[in-house]
Structures are given as C-alpha cells and as structure tokens.
Amino acid sequence: MRATVIHGAFDVRLEDRPDPRIDGPGDAVVKVVASCICGSDLWPYRGENPVKKPRPIGHEFVGIVEEIGSEVRTVKPGDFVVAPFVVSDGTCPHCQAGYQTACQNLVGYGSGKADGGQGEYVKLPYADGTLVATPEVPDDSLVPSLLTLSDVMGTGWHAARSARVKAGDTVVVVGDGAVGLCGVLAASRMGAERVVALSRHEPRQKLAKEFGATDIISERGDAARDAVLELTQGVGADAVLECVGTKQSMTTAFEVARAGATVGFVGVPHGVEVPIGTMFSRNIGLNGGAAPCRAYLPDLMADVLAGAIDPGKVFDAQIPLAEVADGYTAMHERRAIKVLLRP
Image (cartoon, helix red, strand yellow):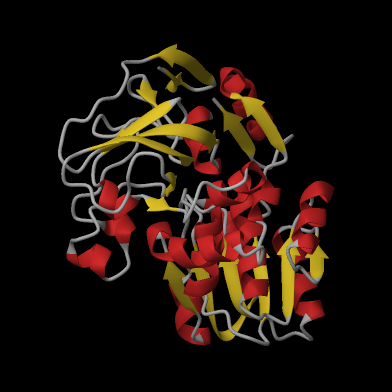
C-alpha cells in the first residue's frame, strides 16, 4: 500500500509500505475512504518537534472495514467507520470514565502497532474500543463532516465542554484553525448567546460566522484583549476556548476571561506558561487537554447524520493522496484551513 512518511522538517513523502494484516484477535484493517492533515502534524513538519527517524504520519481517517480479528464484536467487514485520533482499548478505568486519550493501553497511529492514518489502509488494534460505525454506508457528501469527528470537531467540542459553555454565555474562541472554527460551532450548538472569534483571515472569518460567530476580532495580543473588553463593557468572557497552544494564545485567553470564568484548552502546548497568579486572584479556571473524541463520537455522529451540524466545511481543499506533500505546504503557508486527502 501507499502511505505518507515524514522524514524530517519539510520532508513528507508518499511511499510504498507493507500491506497490513491481522496480527491479533482485536485487530481491524480499514480501507481508507478519506484522511486529512492536522494542524498538529505541522509541528514536526516545521521542525518544531524533532523527527528522529522516518515514520508514518496521520491520525484522522474514515473508511470501510476490510477484515477483523476473531474477537471483534462491534464492527464487521463492510461497515463505514470513523477512527478517533488515538487507539484506545475501551475497557481500562480511564476509558470507562470517558477519557480515552489517557487509555492505559494507548496506541498512537504510526507507532508500529497501528499504521499511519494518511495512507490507503490502516491496521489497528482494539477495534472495539476505538472504531465507531455509522448505521449504514453514508452518502459521499457526508464524508468530510464525518471525518472531522476523528479529531477537530471532537476537539472543538472538548474545548467548549471544558470551558463549561452554557446557554446565554459570551464565549471567546482564540484560534481560527479547524479546531477553533469547530469550537465556534460547538459553543453555538451549546447555546452561547455571543460567540467572539479571534481571526485575521477573511476566509476563516466567513466560516466562523457560518458556524455561529456573532463577532469577529482581527487584532492580536493587547489589542485583542482591549477589543474583547470593549465588546463586553469591560467584563470579559464567561468562557474562553484556547485552540492554538502557544504562549501568546494562552496569555490572551486569560486576559479576556472574566472573573470566575473557565479557559478550556485543547491546543497542544508549546512554550506555554500558565498564569497561576491570575488564576488565583480572579478565580479563573483552566480545564481541558487531549480531547477524548471517542467519548463524543456517538452524539456528534448523530448530529452530522441528522444534518444538525456540518463541520466538514472546514475542509477548503481536497486533493489526491499522491499530492500529500503539496497539502502540507498549503497548510504550512496558511493557504488552506484544512486539507482532505482521497486515496
């Protein structure tokens, strides 16, 4: 099969890899219908996370089950499935509590135990604890939205849930990537009265409004803080979604939060400093982390299939898997919000 392999900074290649095969009774092999490039894939692509040796990359995909191990019970060959961005056993105490990203037997895609997601096939263990099947094979028009459930929509939802968004709230979303945009959609879906998106890019601003943003702020840093405070009569936001993971984004998140608010953070932290003094003096909470997308998948899938949400709009580019390197370049240069790959 063909699969994407990262060799180092700015060096992504589509290569021939061994065809996957069932190794254990809980395994499944999935033929990929669509996969995509994640913002977190850009950290190693840019060289900000070291790549010690070439490795398969990609952790978001949907597809058709080809083969299963003898003990798999929840999916069968022919099922269309969504795969969350990590492999979890579904049975450990953390999985049972709804935090599958902290599974005691966690497996990452491209680790050797599971293939990378940006390829033609993926073999993974713990199929019962990981894969979620749709009731029937969906129309192709639904594939982009179902694909977002593997990561970005579930992660945006986790940001809003972690920030304790409730009906009537004023919510600020820091970050206008696919996760931030899905955070706007999640906050709106949860009943927020005002959703303020921080974005400097017109296409992303437009999509944020489609997803329910009531206000757009294009400033950054101190200017963004001042603009939010002006919008809220000097009070700040009831809930803040931090969807980037940088020092500046976290600083802004706390500066725009009202006293007693919660910052829901899902951006992978890079150089972040938590302002514990501000948290203490203003009773601002911090909650979140790696999103347990598997926990949210059934409900979000029902919303997608019912037409209640259409998060697939975050894909503003669809390209063949053969052009995956161009997809990475487009996202690195911010010419694309999120790139969908078709094998």
